[in-house]
Image 1 (cartoon, rainbow, N blue to C red):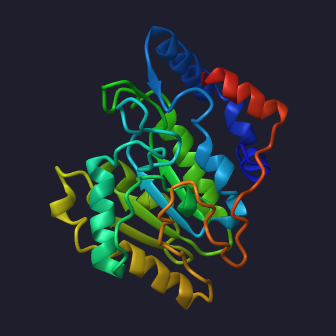
Image 2: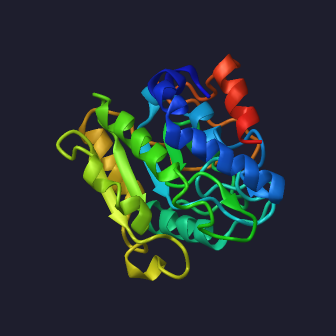
Length: 252
């Protein structure tokens, strides 16, 4: 976990709800497969430092298929087939900005350009969507949204789906901008996600505040380093501190 996030969230990890959450995830990992796998729950918090967030994309819970979730909402690792929700995101990106979809589903370039890719629930049991709801993650991500909202620098919150939309009331819309729509899942994309133009709207609002906005074009090569965006550290150092070690062990 990056030092900026560790400092901001340190008080959460000793609270009773979080200790219960840790015990729950540990028990789930002993009983079967849990995604993201061990060591990848905190990827978003490692790759996008708190002070570099321009856009928050908030989803529901991680992909529940083998090899998919790796700690960035909607992203899959190189070589893994893009899930339907991500394909719909690419369709909307092309419709919105004319950006042709890449052949991979690895969104690391976005994370390193200041897009914080978070789910309201951060773990899931294999093959069981929503299986880790109500176990404490919602409380934790409420706190994450609160920390982001308290930051002076303006940012855009993109809320996809009902669970994400429920966080809107915690965001100060006088300082930040909220873009909410249905989830990009095939079951709901036609109910407001398609045509919502979140990418151009996010950049338009940021640029109106004198900020550069996000370079949404992903590299054709999933493993290629993204182009450096002025003012954004694209590959922040992961902090190998005691807390980070403890969290890694606790979640697998």
